[in-house]
Length: 153
Image (cartoon, rainbow, N blue to C red; front, side):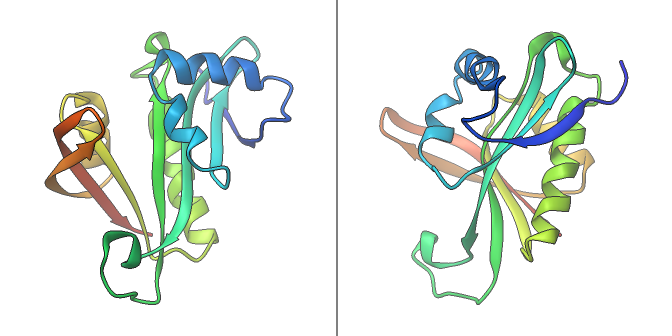
């Protein structure tokens, strides 16, 4: 497989419905819908949407009820790769694009939280040099163990 094309898409993109279908299949649509200011990166080829990564920029500190540091971060909302496109560099390409975009936006770091059962995502983040710390994710339907990944950009 050759390297996928990665672009930033909005709801006006002609192939947006394909992305929505993949977001639904990966159970990530609600995360993207939470933030209308999200930057949505899409990996695709001529035939299909291969993966996605959505993030937004936030100040470090106040969202976690801590004092502001005067720094921002790119916080990942959603990330996924079509099952048949996994282990082909799509997720890696999306994560590297995130880091490039975060740096271009003047962010200090990139951060994401993932469920402990998303083993491929955990391995990818570690391979890219993200630091990790365990946490408990407080969700409407209950608490779940998760990992917080952070990387300086």
